[in-house]
Figure (tube, helix red, strand yellow):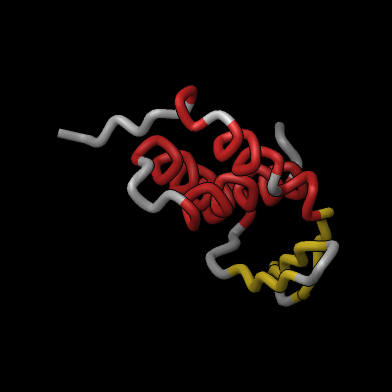
Length: 96
């Protein structure tokens, strides 16, 4: 089973892609899948995100307890950076 921290990392990485490419149907579907996993497996429906020069912080509330997870920007933004560097490899195929 993938840990909550890993799911948050994956969700945030793809969320950054969706924010930059809202018409990317594959990215949108992947983000929605992780949101469903977070809700179903961890009871998390709301996430609070803060970004500074170095880190992304995600605050979650679970079982009445609030916890914050932090991830370096360079790790979270690696996917969108790669897409931007080689856009021809990441063509969006819109749904018909």
